[in-house]
Image 1 (cartoon, rainbow, N blue to C red):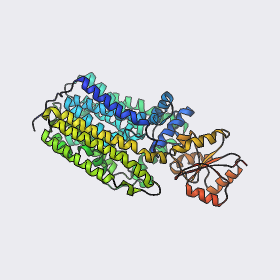
Image 2: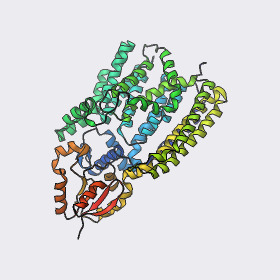
Image 3: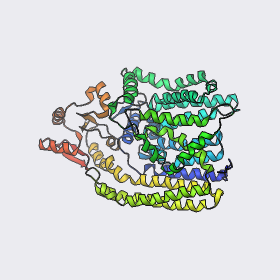
Image 4: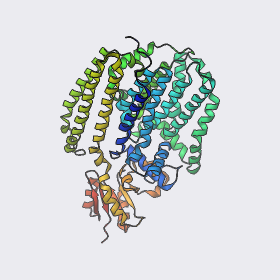
Amino acid sequence: MNDMPSRLPLNRSTLLLLVLALAVIWFVPLGWRHLLPSDEGRYAEMAREMFLTGDWITPRYNGYKYFEKPPLQTWMNALTFAWFGIGEWQARLYTALTGFAGVLLIGYTGARVFNAATGVFAAIVLATSPYWNLMGHFNTLDMGLSFWMELTLCALLLAQRPNLPGGQVRLWMWLCWASMALAVLSKGLIGVILPGAVLVLYTLIARDWAVWKRLHLIGGVILFFAIATPWFVLVQQRNPEFLNFFFIVQQFKRYLTPEQNRPGAFYYFVPVILVGFLPWLSVSVQSIRHALRLPRQPNGFSPVTMMLVWSGFIFLFFSASHSKLLSYTLPIAPALALLIGLYLPLVTPATLRRHLAGYAAFLVVAAVGALFMSRLGDDRNPTELYVAYRVWVLAALGVAFVLTLAALWLNRRGRGGIVGAVATFGAAWLLLGTIAGTGHDVFGRLSSGAPLAPAIKAAIAKLPPDTPFYSVGVLDHTLPFYVDHTMIMVEHPDELAFGVSVEPQKWVPTVDEWVQRWDADRYALALLPPDRYQKLLAQHVPMEVVARDSRRVIVEKPQH
């Protein structure tokens, strides 16, 4: 392959228009879907409670102490509620902002560490990869964590550029240390353990001992603890039980034991990465090969080796864990995007044509497969939901197919059309994820319980402010947010077990005890699973239905 010039045929106005177009697609749909259980509802409700109570030190969920994660995202969501009101798009805004900022950051880093072409292509790859795009639109902790870890990596790469003035090296490294502290405040010790382990492994593999002289360790460590320490000190002062639960139970036992009931095979994250980078799989192997051939910088530092160690170690670290979720390996996405961005400027029109034609055929096959989605229905998600969602999936695939054909046409212009072809192909997958993700609300509407909220809130408004609202045998992660009301757990504390253990007066251990309290209460509300409601009805427990769907029944204590 012939080398492509490092400068792209794109002026600043064109780049700005691309960024604005991405911003519109990225941010406008944030409020078009209901919150999904469990993460989206949980973190939105925690922020709502923090905002309303004014307690910014002790996180609570459903009224119970909740120390499973640090509070940075809860702080950001609570601030968003304070500034823009409580709602769905507000609950997703911090996540979306960090995802969007991550795209701009990888573009800037690629341009500064390598060249402009690498920066633009890396940003396109990251923005349009389903892994980053979809996770950037869900209110979970892993996108915020991934951004701060990305900033840790990128600041390190930017600080290690050759011939950089000493003052700039220091500022970039201070930013690296500060972002590690914010990663710790996002999700705990992995924010510093993972980058630290990567640095040690990189040093051993690359035999680059000189990098340690440019880390600004003393100032960096001081800055790290100045940012990360205050909340831990304050929360421990107010809650003596915090340190043991947070560090021993959540940080170590969570990783080393299967207590969290999130098992997975060692290869669990292989399909996650394959699907997450599906639009760019056909160039992934070539990208790694190309990256491995790149020489070190004149100062001996190897950005490519650092990114490969970063990606490989984090992938293996979470693969070895007893607790696995799809989003855990998200922090490697920016590094992978940058590695692919290094190779894409070198792709010939003939190679790109084969790439695009293969994906056009894939989209046609996927559309044929989508026609059979109606066979997937079950009691929890009825067939009619899949039929409704099929329309969205087919529309998404159709838009992606048309844009892929447009990319093929642009590619016919030769070298000059490669940037436009890649950007158009990326837009195809960005819109595929956006349209299909928006359409998923046919399921999200039911799982959120939001349609029941008006009737429940109307019932609450007629009752005294201290009326108890019980959650019997189940923790509903989204309904408390939609009805603006916490619930008293009954029988099954679920993930609120720690909060229940330190404040046992706030829950009811058995259903029999709850029935006694229900009989004694003058006013009361309760959330019940449908099967539990039928059993209690057969026992002649007095209940009046306020609202119900296929997953939950909300009842009120009769007033007559």
